[in-house]
Image (cartoon, rainbow, N blue to C red; front, side, top):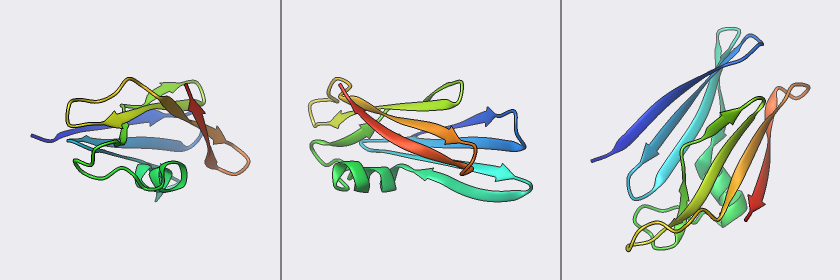
Length: 114
């Protein structure tokens, strides 16, 4: 009953990223990477939900944030989001844009509301 996906993102640096995506009446997404043999958790959607949505991403919680599967394009990862409702999810309300900052060796995060 639970949907889980693992995606691999290769880069032109010595960095490989993995996206762990879970969906079942809520969503949870982690982006972790291996750089020079060391694991790092770069993105946790629970932390994004705390910052941008007041932590409103609970299991079967009407109106909570529901993240779609991420879309990778160039140096950006886009994560569309919508709301979970008992009647079904809403239309996409916006997206979270992650852009790799090579100087910081981390992602910048931008919220875009539609």
